[in-house]
Image (cartoon, rainbow, N blue to C red; front, top):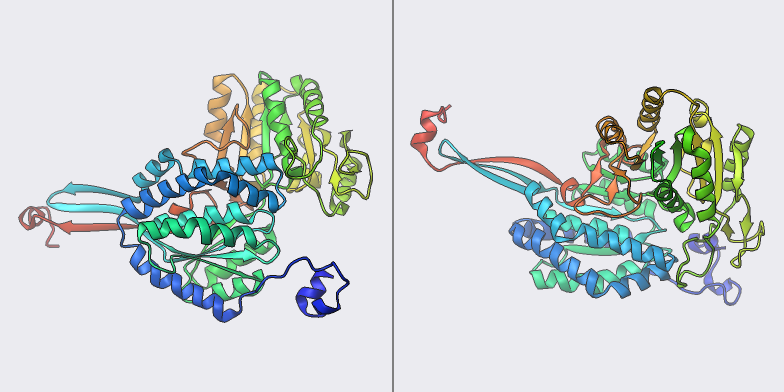
Length: 494
């Protein structure tokens, strides 16, 4: 019925009473183009502001705003449907991204100057221009905030507010972020928000000569199509797509710590791109680890998003979960725990909105990727634990690294081990992923590291760790002669 209402096939007046609980204005093409034009004009002014204003000042005041109004941000996220604990975690990521340590690192990348042979040689990153941000419907606010950090590069920004959850983005931009930009003296049009259908708005952005970059959050097939379209017309695609993160657990690992990290894969019922999606485990510790994971997973419970301690979210469609689970069992995996739908009180019910945290055991690396649950992101609470065949440690480690590096995706990857030689080899040899974690929470934010960004299907052909400030700027070299005589002596006349 919602689709029929949105398409105009059904009038709101003709819908059953009590069905329509809210309506939102959708931007026409002209409004979208107006926002782009405003951002383009603003960027011409904003990019000339010193770094002390548009980078240091913006990130500092944004950080202060997040800390001052954190309860308001969290309330918006809960209204979007995020469990309270996860909303707090998401805001910790924004605090980390805007902390002084992160800002200090970004400043070192934005501009450096050297005086050599009578010349001022400057290496700087210049603004791309207009950056358009398409956040996902399941996490619009924090994704919009991430995209808005690209203002520090001197860009003008246009954010699409999803039509299914427009309020949080529009409220925060108008009432919390706009005053910060006013305080910095940013011109009108520096940051814009419009609500509309994703397809037509993305098409308008791609075809607009004023748009330079498109930051897209979403699934892989659509994201890669947008990447191709952007490249064809000379725009920069910045993709935040699916993740399929791997946690490697070595034989000397802290198993309690590793189990805690793996259970993070059930947070939000697995509907987060940066949670663990699978584990690859040394056979010597597999049984012990799986028992600890099951024990921790059984303590998770569903609930309403504003309740303390709730980490599971509703999963609106269970058909894909059922198919992937059946595929895994048919191909040799063992169902260790879970596997059923449940009601909000935890009782099993195939018609319930929630899914039990589900653990699979798959013996053997060689056949593991035959399982859809291992090969691709699942986006529900299903954790395959792959137990390697017994072999000598040298062989096993080589197989583990190869397994991680041949993952089609590459957002975050983790290692749990205490042998320093193992840690060093892992860090040296694992090239897949935008972020590597060792003996740490898989999902924790640790400044000045970026919170997002990855390789492979996660970030497309240009994927890497994602600081929007850096991704939406480009390197320029500048040479200014200050001593003509010295310059001539070193070949400057040529």
